[in-house]
Image (cartoon, rainbow, N blue to C red; front, top):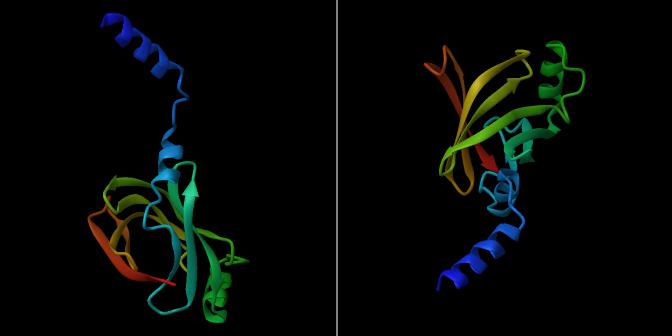
Length: 138
């Protein structure tokens, strides 16, 4: 019996180990997709970035692009708005949100409300005061 257990342990040690990023890619979070803000002026595509969740602008209305330019962001499309969100529970993430028309980044939480809605919060004072928006899947 000990010999069989030793053989099994040896075989397990020879298996390649999976990294956190590999697990994140294999168990695709529902938060991955394309999302539009409540005003319908910005679309963000979320995806994996080094095992975390990130999101980049893939479309922006002319008014959103003008607001971003006024704040010093020359090209809004391609800008990473959602940065380094790590999972803090089922359908919940914490990271940093970049607000282009303010030219600032804030501590942020994302909560998956359902398959088609993300509640994205930007916070100040270590998360004490937050403002939230519900983004819907496109």
